[in-house]
Image (cartoon, rainbow, N blue to C red; front, side):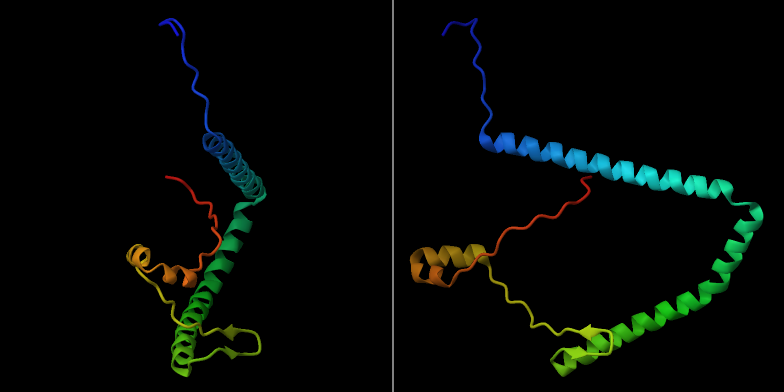
Length: 142
């Protein structure tokens, strides 16, 4: 090959897949932005037809309900904490008429790196190893 010839770099299958996923994520972000813009425009149109008199009535209603909503929220938080404490002490799940408090055994965790290193010299340990399926969460990238 002479100096004037250039070598073409062929992307790997992983790089191709990664690019396709990036493109899909970019499409998803665009759809989310479109949905947010639609919600904003819709609210602008709704706000545009509200008279100052209607806005005042809405503000009065919001003010009227605010103390009751805050009190209700406080009671819910206190009762939820009470239920959690009681269920932990009870040691088992409890069903109410509409809700269920589910007691779960504490999770066991191991230092995977250390155990895997130890298992290299004790391969029989690998028979007890189970690995779950991977999962995906989609988050806003900052």
